[in-house]
Image (cartoon, rainbow, N blue to C red):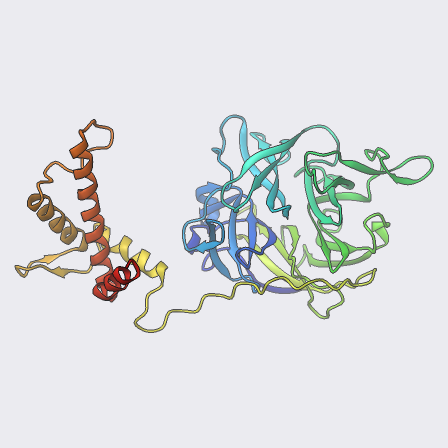
Amino acid sequence: MAFIKRVTGPGVTERVNMVSADLGIVCFDPARKAFAYVFGDNFSERYLRGEWQSPSIVMYDANHDLLGIPNGQKDIIWAPRRQALDYPHNAGGISTILPCDMQLLNGRWILSAMIVGMGGLGDEKATQFFGSTDLVHFTKFGPSLEHPGHPGNVMLTHDQQGEWVYVFGTGGLARNRPIYLWRCDAETFPDGHWEPWGRDNVGWEWGNANEHSPVLNGRYGELSFRFIQGNPVLSFFDVDRYSCSAITVAKVTDDWSQGNRVDYARGPEVFQLYGGYICPDSRLNEHPNGMKFIVSQWNTGANDPYHVIAFHSSLDAKGPLVDIEPEPEPRPKPEPPKEGEMTPQALYELLLRELSASGSEPIIGPEGEKLTLRQAVEQIFWKEKGDHGLEGRPRYPGKSDDQLGHVLNARAEGLFNQALLVALAEKAGIDVGALYSSVQEALK
């Protein structure tokens, strides 16, 4: 067991307005060349206080260092994290929605999640699926697995190999069930038929009912399944061993109780641990630390620590390692700006600071008066309104107006935005005249 670093917590994730968080399912995003971490219940402040969200997606580099949040199709920005699903907590019979797993399949991100009732942990009402093309906007689709039902289709994990998506599942957050296996055609997952892997009087076979034939007996919590160099690897929280552990076998249908195993985080060393998610850039047969895992820790007495931790460990494959095409180089950690330069984030923060009621740097006006940026822009704005006959503009959007009024509204708003941008650019040391000339030249 080798501790790497904290992935969330004080001094780590304040910049995205998230200090308390757990889970941390990891997927590689080829569009952004970075790793998407899907967190469960997370809060803006320490001790599970402040704004409550779940699930939330935050981007990291290969060293588990924070990059920001996903935005648009390929962007990563510094901004407060946002809840991936649109719902209020503790309303409509739902306490929270907790992520189970996420994968990129056929150009669409598929997020599986447990709908938790007002009874809290152990009161899972259903497991549902949500799709997204950009990691920002998710919509529900696919089946709704209502609970209670099958003993193992509450907490899920899934990954693709060839034409199949393989699904492992266990019970809910009571963590009192074994682990079961299904497969579904990759073209139709999760809507298609889930074929169980079960045992009858003859033996194990696809299509046999599996309610009474789990692939791994015991009591388990959070699951994470990934194909690593062609080998199936299953990670989980093992209640009876009080550990986060991983097992690998040569084929999905092999006897998982006979696989190679590592207990990469143990309760005595990491008290009140749970979770255990495989990082997709893990490697088998690499010693000492080829495998990377994400573990949660929650001191339920004090609600601190309540954070996510990265661990290294080693695991030897049972089957041959498959040469895989290298993924695009993960996005490097942004370098700090050189002296005199400002990043877009710094400009954004400057704007917020300058437009705030306090803390603004003074600007000397034409009469020698000291103005804040907000006051200077307001002064420019009112002068323009007087010079161009724009009194009373812009008019409130909900009010009716004539055609000339609409034009004047647009003129007033444009002048205001122009003045604001020029003032901000000059504060940042940007040569506005040169920039304007280059734009004019480009438009010829």
